[in-house]
Length: 290
Image (cartoon, rainbow, N blue to C red; front, side, top):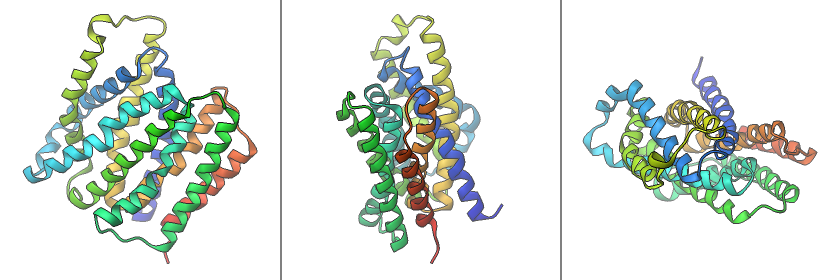
C-alpha cells in the first residue's frame, strides 16, 4: 500500500470508528453521568495503552514531554468531558457534525502559530466541507427544535483543542512513534481522570443495575476501540499527512454518526444526504494535488 492509499485507508477507518463513538456515548450516558463517562473513558484507555505500549514511551525525549502534555490536555482530556456533556444536551449526530469545524481551525491555527503553508484548493475544500456541515446542522436543528443548542458550544470549543493538537504533533512530535505519543498522552492524564472520577463518588456509590451494566460495556468499547486504537491511528495519520488532511476526518464522521442516528430511530432527510455528498467533495479537494 503506497502513502496515498495508506492515508485514505486511515481516514476511512477513523471515520467509521469515531462516527460510531457518538452513539456509544449516547448509550453509555443512560447509566452514567457525563463526568463519569469522560473520566472512565480516559482511565480505561490509559490502562489499555499502558499494557500494550508502556515500553514505547522511552522514545520520548525529556524536552518533548511538555508537548506531549499539551497534546494530551487539548486533544484528549478536556474534549472527553466536553463531548460527554454535549451528547447529554443535544443529539449525538449533531455533536459529531459540530466537530467538523476542526479542519478550518487547524488551517488558520497552523498558519498563524506554527508557520504551516496551505494550498488554495485546501482552503476551498474546507469551505465546501463547512457548507455541507452547516446544512446538516440547520437541518438537524429544524428536525429537533426542542434541544438546547447552547450545548453546541462544547464541540466547537473542543475543535480548537483538536486543531492545536494536530499542529503540535506535526511540528514537535513528528519523529516519535504514534504508539509512544498516544501512550505518553494517557500516562499524563490517567491520574487526573482518577481524581475526577473519585470526586463524583463513583467508587462509593456506583451499583450494577440493568442500566449501568450495558453502559459499562459501551464505555469499554468506546475507550479501547474509539479512543485507544483510534488515537494511535490518528497520530500516525498526522505524521504521514498534513494537519488539514488528518482533521478532514471530522467531515466524514457526521455521515457515519447520522447513519447510526437513523438506526437509533432518528430521521434522515434528502437534504442531509445531499449535504453528505458535498462534505465528501470538500474532503477530496483538501487532498487534491495541483
